[in-house]
Structures are given as C-alpha cells and as structure tokens.
Length: 250
Image (tube, rainbow, N blue to C red; front, side, top):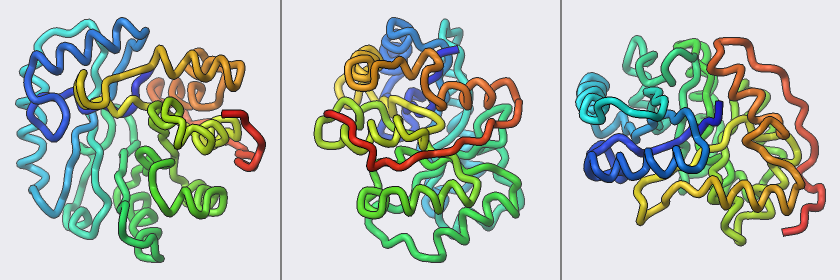
C-alpha cells in the first residue's frame, strides 16, 4: 500500500478541489505517482460549523466522486480548539476504520499548557490518537524542534509531515532531519489542486533517494511501517526518535 495521508481532494469542501473535475485530476495524478490509498481530510473548524453540518457536506462531496480507481478513506483535518469538546463523540471525524484524528494546531498563537491539555483530552475523552498535521510547519516546532516533538510524542501523538517540506529548499533541512531521525509517522501531499499545491510524490522520492539514499514509500523509513499498521488495525510499533541535529546535506 502506498499511502497519501493528507489530501484535500473532496470537491467544494474547503480551499481544496473546487469541482469534481479538479478532484478527478488530483486522483489521477496520485495514481500516476504510485499512490494506491488516499485519506480524504477536508478542513473542519468546530467554531465555524456544527459537526452534523460538516458530516452532511462531507458525505455529499464524497458521493459526488462516484467510482474511483484509488482507494479513498474518509477522515478530516480538524482544527484543535475548545469548541470541539462540546460533542459527546467525534469518532466520525477520525480516519475511517482507525482511531486516528488528524489535527491542525494554531499557527500564530503560542503553544501554552492549554493546548497540551486539549491534546490529552482528545485521548481521555474520545479515546482517539492525535496525529499532528504537517508538524514541521509550525513556528513552535521550528523554534524548539526536538524538545516540542518529544512533548508531542510523550503525549501519545503521531506526527505527519508534508512532502512539500522536503521539496522546498527553505524547509528541507528540518524535514530531512525529522525523517532521518524517525520522528515522522506519516507523510502526505496536502494536495489542494493541480495549480495550487499539486501532489509531487515523484519529486519527493527522487530527493529522498539523493539525500538519504532511501525510499520512504517502500518501507525504508519508520513511517511506512506505521502506515501499514494503521490500516491493518494493528497496534503501532513503538518508535525511538533520535536527535534531529544529525547533519543532513540539503
């Protein structure tokens, strides 16, 4: 299984695909790049929309895709905020057939104790495992690096990295160090359209082969083992991250 863990393929859900044709173009691009399974993770902002309304829109959008050569799995990219906790259950936001919830964290607000308490509540109240979306993009992570990554891991969070962070030279160094250090559980394209943030797994693979002499999509890094376990409903293997200060040529 070749997995894209983070996509915005569902049409007319968010700032991703705006039509069925745009969604079909993204699906075909992923297939051509060797992806066999994609998780559909439209944005959900609990402070903007009720959970029932979001789920209804998501089902309509999903149904509009019809039959598809790509294995599609329903999920969400849920923004972590206090409004989320008004619901008795949020299991339908989790990635289908798993207990994993892809979470977007605040970009501009400081990560104080309240945020880490909310992550704990995701586990204690809902029995879900937080997966931190594009973890490398947050200023808090870029500033504190290993320290904050370890805090997230100690809370039982899993970490998802965007492949564009490896492709972009400005973010490549940190992204490669995180991959080499075993911090990353899943990678995703975070694709939105063929014009804005298209999937680029072919380029991602070539850069990994050149820089790390490995192919993350074929099991040479810890993330793929975790991805396999996640979708075979097996317990994730424990990971032992190493320092991200290890030198990686960019």
